Image (cartoon, rainbow, N blue to C red; front, side):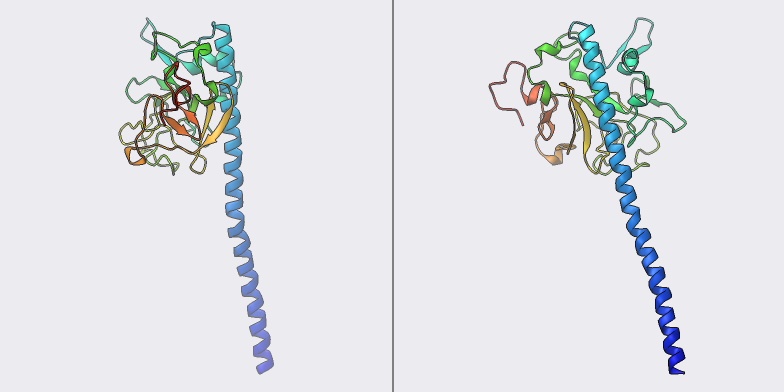
Length: 254
């Protein structure tokens, strides 16, 4: 009896061990697969941002160093947006979509929350390049620190928690922005520029290079912040390296 019991106990241990090992292998595979997906989305987003920046700079070359408006109302009361302007330079429509925070595929059109024009992109263009420092477009040759000035940021469906955005975190409101103001912007308690890559945001600078950055300021609790010139994170600023135009001999505001 003891031998049979011991044999059964050993068999039972083998079964339990086999099941346990299978569960461990399955659980271990889940985060690896998740990180692979995250890495792929991050790479795709950076590649698309690089393409957007490159095409925007091509547009500026064709228009005497001036970049297009983020959005402008035409005399016929319709809106012309920067994604529509860049269609002549971008052949692949998927370029406009951030795979980590898409506006497509939801079965409903996204709109600007106040102006209500359609938003067909998951990226937002820095609105300071138009009607901010002078009427109309700001000449790119007058931008002194292009490598530290943001041109495009990730946007898409707005989120309750920008640092830890979840897919269902936008309260089912079909709103998004295609122009960038500041990371502290909030509309109806939602943030329009979430960090969708493990707490980091993908950006494109005005010299065309792309990077992942940890956003320093999302609210007043994060410290004092200059919403015009301020640091988005890791040396990328809202404007001119954090300096006013013509003040490159002075330290950045943040």
